[in-house]
Length: 114
Length: 111
Image 1 (spheres, each protein chain N blue to C red):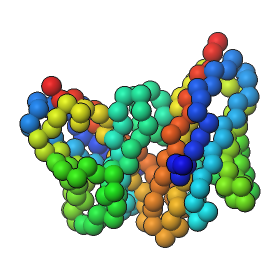
Image 2: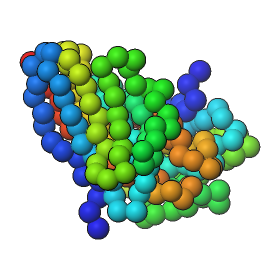
Image 3: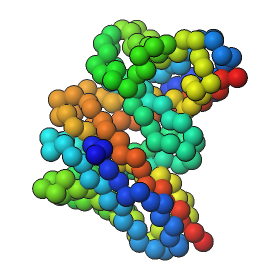
C-alpha cells in the first residue's frame, strides 16, 4: 500500500512567485492535514480538510495561503506571492474516517525561497 | 498554558540506559493518544498508540493516566538509533480528527 505521497520533494521559488504543494492521502483515508515546520522548530498545524470541505483552517495565515481537497485528485496547498519567511518543510498527513486512528505523514516538501 | 506539554529536553543518555518521557494534556475530553518520533529533517513517524491499559512494543512502553491527564513513554536499553525527537500527540475529538502535537522532546543516545 502506498503511503502518503507528497510532491515535489523540493521546491525552489523566487520571491513573488506561487508555490503549489500536492498531497495524495493513503488509500482509504479521507482526512488530510497540512503542517509547517521551520528549522529547529516544532510542527505547526495549518489546515484540516476532508473531501471538498475545509474543517479547520485556524493555523493558516490570513493572506496568500489556501488549501483545497477536491473530490478528485490530491490536496493542494497553495502559497501566493511567496516571501523568504515561507521557506520551511511542509508536511501532509492523512487519516481514515474512523476515530481513534493515527495520522500518517508524507515525506514532506522542502520549500526554499530565493 | 499549551494544550499538550512535554519534558523540555534535550535528554542525553548513554547506550543501554532507560529513559522516560512525560506528556500532559489539558483537555479532559481527549480520546486517543499517540507517540511519534521525528528524525532530523524527516517526517514524523508513528511509534505507537497509547491505550488505557498501557501497552508495550519491544523496548518501548507507553502508559496513560486519564485521571492525571498524563502520558508516558519508556525506552529500555536505548540504542544509538533511538536518537530523535519524540512527539506526544493527542486527539481531542472522538467524532472527528483533531490532533494536537506536543512540542517534542529531543533524545540523544551517546556511545
